[in-house]
Amino acid sequence: MTGSTDSQQTVTGEHWRNALLIWDYHQMHHELRPADVAIALGSHDLGVATTTAKLYHAGLFPTVVFTGGNSPTTAARFPRGEAVHYREHALSLGVPDSAILLEPNAANTGHNITYSRQVLDAAGITPATVLLVSKPYMERRSYATARKLWPEAEVCCASEPLELDDYVKSIGDEKLVLDMLVGDLQRVIEYPKLGFAIEQDVPEDVRAAYESLLTAGFTSRLITT
Image 1 (cartoon, rainbow, N blue to C red):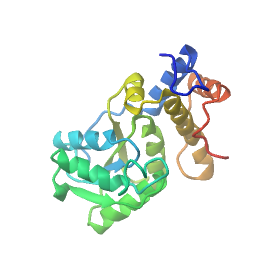
Image 2: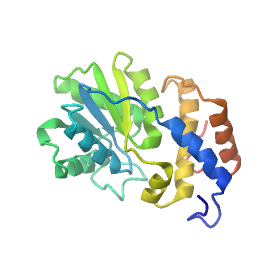
Image 3: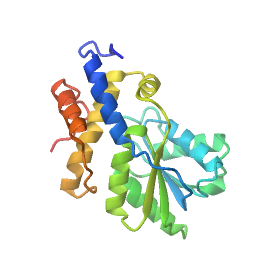
């Protein structure tokens, strides 16, 4: 796949091959199994709520926490907050209100986990197994964060089953998606050093793809380290 919505950055075939490696690495490829609760992590992607509703109707969990406040990238799309809009979408897809808990304040993944745990505790729920539902490329980072902050919970990850090409089409900006893939991988690498997540092995080919995309300028979603 080539071309770009950014006149300053053409996505070449080599860029795309590197992105595919990172896309696959970000997904945990967990075998889905029933869990005590699900936590759906807020973002710009309403597909997270859609996937959560499908998994609820498949009988994978009895209770879900929708978590997320606002960020600069979601305020216009979800003016009432990510969790609130996710809840409304899930209700429209037939998830009963009695199965939903709301956490409307989280501003990052650590908050998503910590605040959701507090909401569950307030509801008298102490889960042994947790299903995290996120954007496809956020599975690994959310897993690493949860394992650091909630080590006693057994964590499984799920996301909308999309190929990278389909995800790019859903977002409408392939340059931005590649920037986000690179940015999330940087966080997977750097956050353990900051105490935010457990360390994850990064295969050599994935790290080489990451370095190549960094050099090519896919850097708009990097953090300062």
